Image (tube, rainbow, N blue to C red; front, side, top):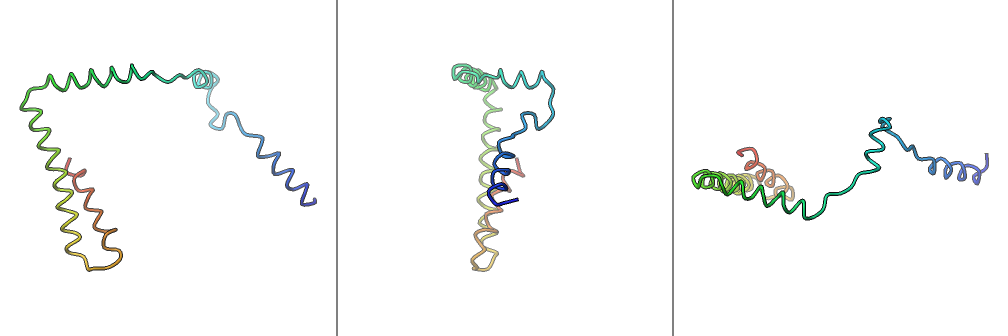
Length: 108
């Protein structure tokens, strides 16, 4: 087989893309083809309603939620600073100290 034949064969196989690589059913394929994105108005209204529901919560619940969020962010900052302070001054120190940022997510 010549180089030209090999290139032509390679291009022909790249064009033959499998239309159903996951072997999903015909109904799933039709549903996927008929998909449509929801409008911006629907997204806006859903978010607005969620916000209204959150504001109906008691003030004490909102206070505690805000306090917990603030503390977890603070823990991230403190953990990163403590790790940075305890490591030697090396080129890899910032990389390792940034792992402290995840502490706030673990606390939450």
